[in-house]
Image 1 (cartoon, helix red, strand yellow):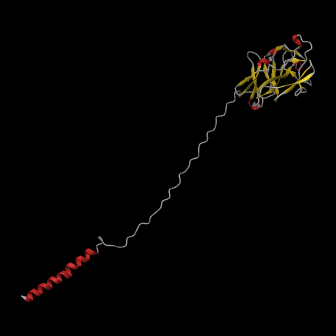
Image 2 (cartoon, rainbow, N blue to C red; image 1 turned 90 degrees about the horizontal axis):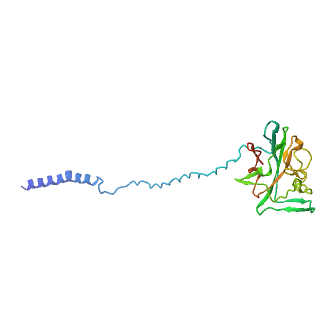
Image 3 (cartoon, rainbow, N blue to C red; image 1 turned 45 degrees about the horizontal axis):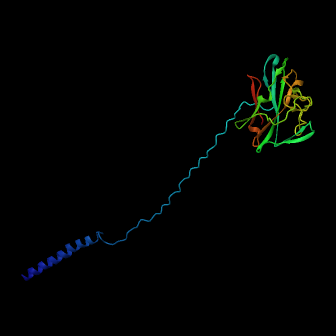
Length: 247
């Protein structure tokens, strides 16, 4: 019995050594709850790419349309009438200044003409020639206007114009110092107020270049007026109308 008990004890010990211990070892090395080297993922700092800035849209102002796209250049002739009354007209020159000096023959003195504050003077030179064979009515000063920036300007009523035809036999052409030696478009005769011929206001333009109506008209206009935005309109009659651009 002793021997049998000893053998049984040896069998139990052997079973524990060869069966139980290997299983415990296997469980211990399985990694569950066991410390080991852990490979850590590197911390990556991601830099956000800068926001792409789109170019700012630039608003281009709409150009102001040309009010007279078919305006004639200076010195270009416009034909009105036909047959025996066929005639031509043109705006051939202009002059601008803040003031002008004019001579009064009645007292033999020079006077400086000044406009209102913010204004200046514009002189427009016009020539009307009759190419036909009969006398023709020509456009009077009131039919010749200046356009600028949507505004219309009439001849300056403050400009003194003598007229012998009105009964004043002592009336003589006004001399404007700054333009008194400007010649007419045809010939060497000096220019005077539009419509006047040696101090007498004309009613008609007679045939022939030598009888042409040639003279200046004075307008009081804004000081900001520029030639490139200024037009002269002439109404020759009920049907014929033309416009010239100064520059």
